[in-house]
Image (cartoon, rainbow, N blue to C red; front, side):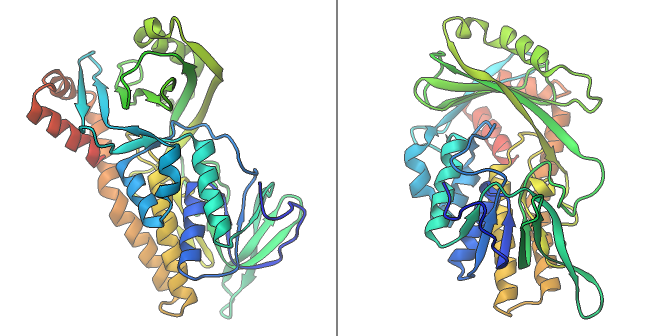
Length: 382
């Protein structure tokens, strides 16, 4: 569902945002809230749409949604989470609970993205679906330096703009980030009628996928998604074989009477340990297009939305003449680096910890209140 026919040629905008996921939507919404007008959001697909994702909303993601003023739209369609089952590589397990108050949530990406989409349309953002962004429109500034001045689609449509926000995810060819990609691979499936503790997620740091993990996330009172993340730098692992082994080892009995919904689906998660160069004249990169996802958990929704908001703040400061573009873009990169680098390096340290007996020991004695608090704090810091 969109407000513009895909054949409509929009030839001019103040800002064009490439990618209508959580990051692009957050950038569009923030820009509109800050009073920036003539915004165009483009995407390869229309809405509502499906998206392969664990669909978890962390406490930080929920705080960001509240800051954007959209949580009241998401909360009614989300499944609240109050605790976590943690399983260590050696098979030790514990339950960490936050009490009756929900600190996280699961929201199907089809519903989540569509709710954000409707919010931005209500704020006057124009949307063009089925727009396969292919290449920038470039021009030279007064000093002869190249500058992004819009985006061109594979079918020839062109949108000229003063700023381009690149928010089209892991496979983006429009990013400023260069060099080999670090990737976490995922594969997941959905089931009805699986026994689980209501309002709790399960995270299994299984030896089979170490230093990554498997999970069970409840989406409703009767449906769950189960999946694994795993490293495969050499590209030699068979995802379905690995996933079947994981399911047989950890969920065989619980899946015996369950009904699978659809087929297995997977996607890569690209990440970094320190955000790199994220801007060029006229262009600003956010979210997974800038490889800003968590290297231990694979979380990306929060990082996409937060960088979308930071990018919007930078663009608004330029549009309102409160800052020059070089200064505003440098501030954006500095803020992203300062915000994420400590957590990303903590994720790297956690991945290393999983190759030692320490995490097993922590989980083994995790029923003790103080250890539960320590484990909860450690996971929250990631």
